[in-house]
Amino acid sequence: MIELDRRGALRLAAALPLVSALPGLASAATNDLAAWDLTDLYPDLASWETARKQVMDALPRLAAYKGTLGQSAEAMAKVLEDISAVTLKAIRVYTYAALKADEDLRIAPNQERQAQVQDMFAAFGEATAWTSPEILAAGKDKVERFIASNDALKRRFAFSLRNTLRKADHTLDTQGEQILAAASSPLSGPGTIREQLFNSDIPWPTITLSDGRETRLDSQGYSLTRDAANREDRKKVFDAYFGEMGKFESSLGAAMAAKLKGDVFEARIRKYPNSLAMAQADDDVPETVYRTLVSATNEGLPQLHRYFQLRRKMLKLPDIHYYDIYPPLVSLDRKFTLADMRNITLKAVAPLGPDYVKQLGEATAARWMDPLPRPGKTSGAYMNGSVYDVHPYLLLNLGENYEGLSTYAHEWGHAMHSLLAKSAQPFELADYPTFTAEIASTCNELLLTDYMLNQAKTKQERIYYLGMRLEGLRGTYFRQTMFAEFELKMHEMAEAGQGLSGESLTRVYLDLLKRYHGPDFVIDEPYAIEWAYIPHFFSFFYVYQYATSITAGTWFANAILKGGKAERERYLDVLRAGGSDHPTAILKRAGLDMTSPQPYRDLIAGFGQTIDEIESLLG
Image (cartoon, rainbow, N blue to C red; front, side, top):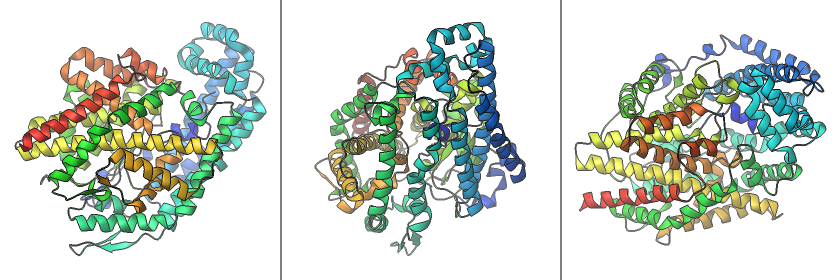
């Protein structure tokens, strides 16, 4: 009923990775007050193991409800409330294991516990696989009568019940649903293999930079050095990192091919016309949103090509290569401590109102985050707000720079989204879908940029923030839409029965790189293995939602900055809505139609206007 298939289970307990680790701050071990406190979940591992066993022990009870769901409104409410209570506990168990695993990827028992909870969710899915078929067997009329006569069904489960009825044509019988639930763990294998290759098996090279520093180029080392000021260093980083990755092209391609075949298998079994249709169905997002995003972005590529030529000019380069996209357009000789990040973020989000600022202030003063890089810790940044009755947790790898500040504001935007949704919705409706998950974070980033521009004291500083705005849009809108095209093309190849290999995927990705970066941009072919660097491709049509979210976040930020309380409350109501309705419907009530090309065109126009402003400042 609360669907926990191989994507749903992970989404409920999933983190939201966005950016890679950043340089500059000391190890978290030097600042215990800055590290998260997992005892708010469980006081120790023994307590976690007890809770895991309680979830497993509850599964036969849930399975025994089979055949009772349609007996009466009270019977239906009893079943759904019990499943919901076990789900709540299961998510807590999963979250603790996932956070412990990410603290240090080198600790095998932590990785083993994470594997245990993946199996736990697979077993949970098997035990409850009969619920959707029984809801469908009861039929729409009976279910609606039950909802009307029972307060718990009306308040907590009506949306999910109706959503199940909506997907009747794609729901299997009980045996079929049990088989798919049992398959969830093995079908997650390709992503696990890719993760293991990157974190353990690929012998990442160590290079010496022009200043004499030695750097090991694993994913974290690559992200730390790819923006090096020295162009030869950047080239050396790209050549070494992607060169080593390319040696594993066949294995990485095999893992991706297996993942794609799993997606196609499930789409066919569920009688969807294609994988994209299945991906969009859970949240009832029209396919036109995906295709309109791609189409409108391709229309706007000339503006992106303008940006690359501005970048070439400002960096005083004779030509522009793929290793030239990360250095800032101008430097900013300013450091931001963790305390600075907190204080600036609180000031930047002031347009969201005093209550928002007060709640964020209290949250950022607590031990909810692990902010600093250290050996063994997972790279990137995410917020995990999956546990309804416990606060969110944030994992970051911050540097004392503006990028670190921006990441701080971004991830706390996620946390505030979770807090607002939980305050307004019951557990069953608080988990917001991926489609809206990045809106709060990107809106925070945009408010931060606006605040920093207003505080800028020199032309150089203003150009820096404008350049970071362009780079943010490049990375989160244009780049993610390119990824979306690639993901769609991969699935279309798999659906057509074309041979899939690392080599064929690299070739498709290279063609996209060339189109998105323009005729005057040099793409060195070995770098096209970059597709394997993107872990999100092992999710399921995930990446496009970064682009739609920054589009929506931009739309709301502009409305808030230009408007007043009404615009602010419309935005906050979107966050409070959580998962109480389908995401495009929630946004449409706030005045934003994501099926229209206009929001994307407006964002691209704003991108062009930022280029105009920088060119004007340059004279």
